[in-house]
Image (cartoon, rainbow, N blue to C red; front, side, top):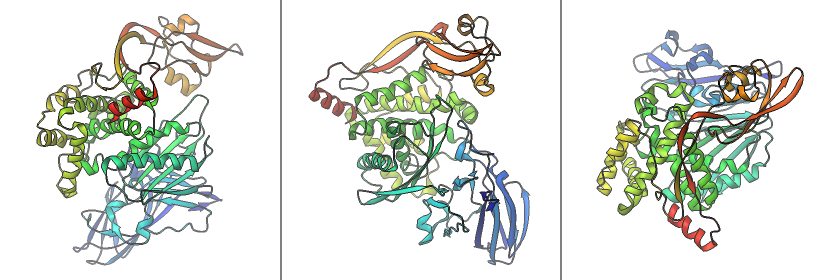
Length: 535
C-alpha cells in the first residue's frame, strides 16, 4: 500500500473455504526468530462471507455457513520507524517501507488452524508500484502446494533489487540483492553456488531450486554485522554493506546446511523448548560448514583455523560458559552470550563425536543415517527432534554410546577442553592462559548515548584517563574478549579529540584454546593435512 509515494503497508488477501462446521479459526503470526507478539503488526481485518470475532490477540474466528467461500483482507505494517536496528531481531519482525519491504512468511500470513493438509496458491500484485519481488513462493503461483510452505518463506521487494541465476548441478539458484557492497552480485552468486555444491555433494541429494536474498544496511564506522535465517528452500540475509565477500563463505554454507539440519534429520524441537536442541541444529551445523568448506576448497586451512579460533575464543571468555541446557532454554532470546553458546558448544561436541566414532565410519555415517531414517518417517511422526535422535542412531548404526558426552557438556554445561590432536592431520590445539578481559566502563551504554558512561575508578579505562561524560567517537583496534591486546577509544574532551589506549586486563586469568597450523607446509603436506582433517 502506497501513501504519499512511500510504501506504508502490505495488503494481504486470503481466500479459503470455511471449515465443515462453519467455524473457521485463523492463527495470526505470534513469535518467530526473536520477534514477539507479531500480531501487533496485523491491522484492520475485513471478512467477506462470514462474521469475524477475536477471542484473543492472536486468533480470529469466522462464523459462516459450512464450506462457505471466505475472503479475508488485512494490512501488515512495519515493526520499525525507518531501517531496523543493526542489533535487532530484523526480519523476526516485518520490515516495510519506505522504499520496499523484506518479510518472512512467519510474520506475514494468517493461517487456518488444523488444516495443515490444505493446498495454497500465491499471487503478487505490485499495485502500480515499481517494486521488483524476489520470493521462494514463486512456485505456488504456478501450481498449488502445501500451506506449510507459507511460513518458512521470504519476500523481498525494492525498485533497485537485482537478481541473477546460476545452475548448480541441474537445479536453479536465484540470488537477489539490494545495496551497495564491495562486490557485485555476480561474484556473490558464484561463491554461493560453490557453497551449495559443497553441501549437496556431502548429502548426495537436495537438488531443488533455492533462493538467497541479501539486503544491505549502512553502518557506523567500525560496525560489521551479518545475520541470516535458513528457510528450507531459501536463505534470507541482512548485512552491513562493509562485509567482505569472503566473510559470507562459511556463513552461507551454515545456512544452506539448515535445509537438512534439523528438518531432514528428524525435525526441530517445537515450542518454547526449541533452543534445547540448538546444540545440534546450530552447533553441528557450524562444525559441518567449516569441515565441508575445507573439504571442497571453499576455504583454506588458514580460514578454517581462524573460524575455529574465533569460536573457541568466544566460548572461553563467555560469561555463560557453564550454563546448563535448561538455562539456555530459559535465557536464549534475552541473553546474547547464551544465544551463542549452543553454536560454540555444539561444534566442539561434534569434533569430539567424530573422534569417538572414527573407527565406526565417523560422524558422517551417523548424520547420513539420520537423514535416511527421517526420509522414511512422516514429518508429523517426529516428536523427539534430530538432536534427541542422534544418540539413538549412533548406537544403532555404530554401536557407540554418545550419551555421556551429551550429558556432561550439553545437559549439565561442563567446560569443554579439546584434546591437542582432536582434528588430526597437521593441526594441533594449544591450551594457554591469558588475563581476563575487562574494559572498566559500560561500552553498551556508551555506544548508545555516544557519551562515556559507567567508568569504574578501579578499572583499566579510568587508569588510562577515560572519564564519564566524555563524548564518545568510536573504538580503535583491540580484540573483544582478549585482555592482552591493546584497545583504543576515540573521545572528545573539552572540545578536543584524542584516543585513549590501554590493555583491557582484569585481575584474573582465563584458559583459552586455539588451533595451530605448522609453519612452512609444502603443497603436498598441506593437501595431506586438508584430507586428514576434512575427509
